[in-house]
Every structure is written in structure tokens, then in C-alpha cells.
Image (tube, rainbow, N blue to C red):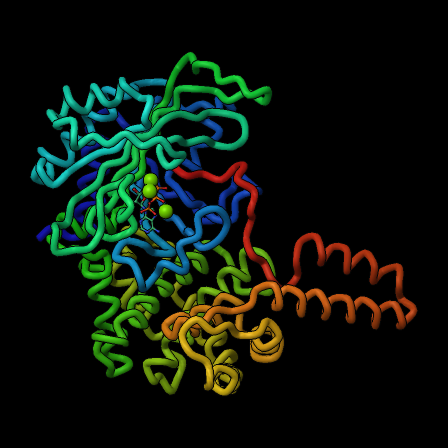
Length: 469
Ligand code: ATP
Ligand code: MG
Ligand code: MG
Ligand code: MG
């Protein structure tokens, strides 16, 4: 069986030997884009090359890019533990052409790698194209010999990528693997596509237009290619697994958390082990890239991820902080590919242990309060926003943690009520501050807090600047 580490190598070798510059992963905190919270696609470090602001010695590159999707336009946090294919941290394998080759070669490379190098049976694959992209449709017929019913035309923005309101954009083509009819789900474009039978493995973006501010779309003189394939998803395919969480890397991490908690991953505890393994990766990689837990911005996203994992550790009955003790297993699995993990290991362990020790002081009490508040509630009930706010304010429960805690019972949280309680507290704090006679300095601070949000960061909602691959 080919290991995940070998698949990464094999991908980079394939494109390296086809004239691509093999580029190491950029950090998770984008250096070139202040509007983006975390690097969330392989193309992010190359944005300025695609727009022409920067040039590279070679017009082709390939990478395995660390990505986090836990906020902003791409937020997969709530999917983790529940779908077979989503992580908060994952690696995106990509090949890029900066005005060099275009559709034909991009499709040829993808097809050759999947079906020749990796020997994936052709009849397990199907693809989508943007509904007006006849060129891509024809190329899939010609290069892959796919029949018309295996090339699905999609009219939505899922198959049209743009960098922002203006700038490069173009149709894309996604490659799906059919895991078989014993798994629920339908092909892309069908009403059942949310299932996990047909899993998107690779997205090929054909950047061929330049979107102008006046709405016009001009043809780019030198069209470009940006592709992204989830390493964990292709590893599942190549290791004969349906589920990303059953690949070698995750098996090892879950085995570590099983052995430390003494609880097997089956039935109800399965999701907890998965969440822990996933969040261990995102938190460790974020810490290694210099993000520290805090009450705002990136640091708050990190804290939210950590605390969610810590609640699941508690659910599994952990009586002591757990997360930091799993770090060695992660370093064993991924430290060779990402030496920064080993370098930061002591720091990662220390921060995780400190955070978990601190959170455990209020976690138990908070969960008791939550139990009492929801005791009489059934499926479909809603927790009052004030209770969620009390949990947030007094017990350090991020809003989404409360939501996650109630999810399995079908109870939702009144978000408006939560926001209102938060606003009320801010107003009260502001009034109290005014009373202290330090109004001038206080105003500035409170204005700032309102603009950037000191305690609750819910992510950037603007679509501009966010990468999608
Ligand atoms: P999906 O529709 O399954 O959520 P996507 O269309 O959002 O995927 P893209 O933005 O096209 O994903 O990213 C390119 C590739 O990265 C995907 O084809 C997939 O293989 C992988 N990928 C995307 N999101 C995740 C995730 N949360 N966890 C693991 N792999 C992912
Ligand atoms: Mg997605
Ligand atoms: Mg998709
Ligand atoms: Mg996609």
C-alpha cells in the first residue's frame, strides 16, 4: 500500500519531471494577502504571479500546500467528524502554469497521473465542466475518452472560479471518484450530491479571463492553470479506503488517542476521535507557523479549534489534558515532510497543555450548565442566546463550541439572541467606562473593538481576495 507521504512525493516527482519548479509549502499565515485569514489553497502564495505583479524564473510550479479552512468563505469546521472528506487542516497538491500551458496539457497531466501512474480505473472517475465550456468538454472526450454521460455540465459558480470582484477568473473542471453504490450520495449536480459517494478529488481551474470593474470580461493574453487536489482524499482512493479518516496518517493519530484515552473509536466515540485527530493537526501546524491562541483574529480561530477538540477529549473521559500528549504521534507521521513541526514541538506541547489546563477549569461547570439548560429540550428545540452568551462569557465556550455540543441532540442555538447579549454587554462596558472620566481614550478603544472585534472573531465575510482554487 502506498503511504500518504509517498503519494505526496509521487505527485511532486511527476510534475517536477515535467518541467515544474518544486516549491515548498508556504506558511499558513499568508504573507502577501492581509484580507485572507489563513492560506486555504495552493494558489495563494502564487496570487501575485497570476496577476502579473511578480514573476518567477520558471513558468510552471508544483507544491503540496498546507491549508486551513476554518473561517471566512471556506469554513469546513462544522463538517469535521461528520463527512468523510473534510478537514480543517489538509494538504493541497497543485500544479500551476503561469501563462505557459493551458487546458489541454492540464487535463492530459491530470489524467495521466491518475490513470497511468496511479492506475486508478477509468470507470471510477467522472468530471464536471462549466456549462458553457465546450472546449473542456471536448478535451475530456478526446484525452480521457470519457463518454458524454461522465462529463457533467454545471451551471453554478462551483465551476467558475474568480480571485475576487476583479482580476483573473475562469471556468473550472472537477474530477470525482465514485466510491460505489453502497455509499449514499449522487453525482455532482444531482439533488443527492451532498452525500459521500462521489468525492471531488481534484479541481482544475482554467484562468482565461480578466474581470474588469465595469463588468466586462476580457480574454487574458496568456491564460494560466491552477489546480488543487486534496492529498488526504487521493490517499483514501489509493489506499482503498472510502473515508479520509481511514488513511494511514489518521489511523496512526486515532490509534494514539485511543491508547491515551483507553476508548475505542466506534459508534458514538468515533466522531470525537476524528475531531481530536483533525484539530490536533490544525492547531499544531498553526502554532508551528507562529499563531498563538488569543481572543481575536487568527488567534481566536485557533483557540476555538483547540477548545472544540478539548471538549471532545473530555467527552471521551480524559481526566487530564490530552492534546499535548498526541503531538509526538503527529511529529512521527508528518515531521519528515514538515520539519517546522519538530522544531516547534516543545512550544506546541507547552501551549496546548497550558490552554487545556486552563479550559478544563471551566469546561466541566459550563457543560453542567448546558445540561441543565437543555434537560427538558427535545429535537428541534433552541437554546436561548443568553445562555449561549453566559457560557461564552463566564465559561469560555466559543459560540460554535456550544453549537457543536448540541448538534447530536438536534438542538440549535439562538444566534440573534447571542449577538444581542454580546452587544448589550459591550454597551454596558462602554457606559461604565464613560463614567470613569476617561472617555476620550475609552471611546477610541471601544470603536476599535467594534470594528475589529476584540473577543469574537467570526471570520471575514467578504468574498474578495479569498482563494477557492
Ligand atoms: P468540497 O466541494 O468537497 O467541499 P471544494 O470544492 O470546496 O471541495 P476546492 O476549493 O476545489 O474544494 O479545493 C481543491 C481540492 O482540495 C478539492 O478538490 C479537495 O480535494 C480538497 N479539499 C477542499 N476542501 C477540503 C477539506 N476541507 N479537507 C480536505 N480536502 C479538501
Ligand atoms: Mg468545500
Ligand atoms: Mg466542490
Ligand atoms: Mg472544488
